Image (cartoon, rainbow, N blue to C red; front, side, top):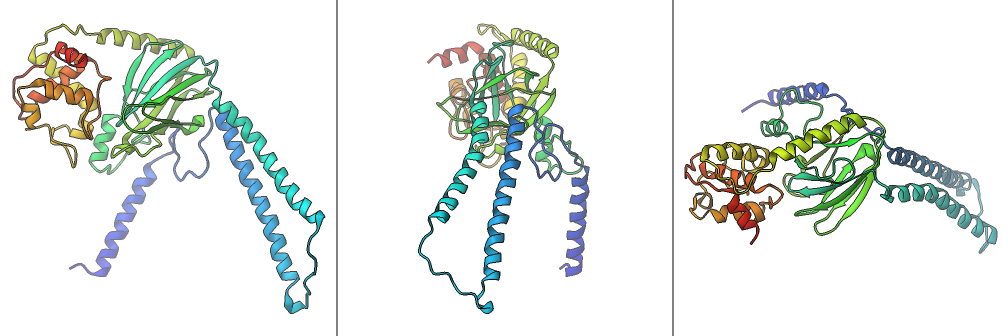
Length: 386
């Protein structure tokens, strides 16, 4: 049994190691800072107004607190019984009633006017240069560019795989400043343009927000909400899902990349080429090795976070390696679960027919599941149409 001194020494060593690791982390531009107490640096006019309101309200409340309690404590001290003070004998004073009604009323008006102005401006989503739909999934974001330059672009944005691996390993040693905030496909928008964000969700309530923009909007299944921002500075800006949306809630970051007009146009062109290349013919018949190779990439990007790279699952997440459902000769069962979800498993209808066929084929032939079964895109397309 360890002595108390040995245990204390161990705790001190662990604390020193944790402090050293913490000291290595630096402020993240566009994201949180080390020992941050104030609001994020604003990069939109709305965020700047919110920061001003924050300090205005705080200082106003402090001044009122100091004045009221100063008068109260002075009165208690000045008119205490030990000094022979005699209480006044009166029932009412019209003057006092008017004063203590009028002053709070004026204070409320002074505070409400600028707050209302900012709130109305924050809700005015008209005349947007760019409209993007942000859909919350467990646990990633889907972005669809609806109007403006880049209309038609669509992609999923999830936590960067390397950061998830660091987290699973305990995140010991050096971690990047953007730890658990970096995504594989950031939302890209042009600087100085009004961007309208339409939010909704596919499964449970999520919330899309970026503190540097001064925006946060709930994403509710079956409902549509919207917000907007106009970033005034290029760079990467970070947020997270702001609703407790399940066990992977902490792994659902938001990264917005603000670029110049020229860089945005170049990005749009590159994304359109990528989308054209991904437009697979659903009638194409794939060979086992080719579709499994593609499925491995789809699995790593979308499934490994829950089912693990080795297919063993964890806790309530069922294993795919050796799963009776995966091994079943009736391929429609696995297709149905991937398409429509079941229990904690979310629906993956946003994936293409080819990607779903590929990931199901991969799960049926990876690890110890050497079934030799191949799911073709046409089978997924037919199941989707049911």
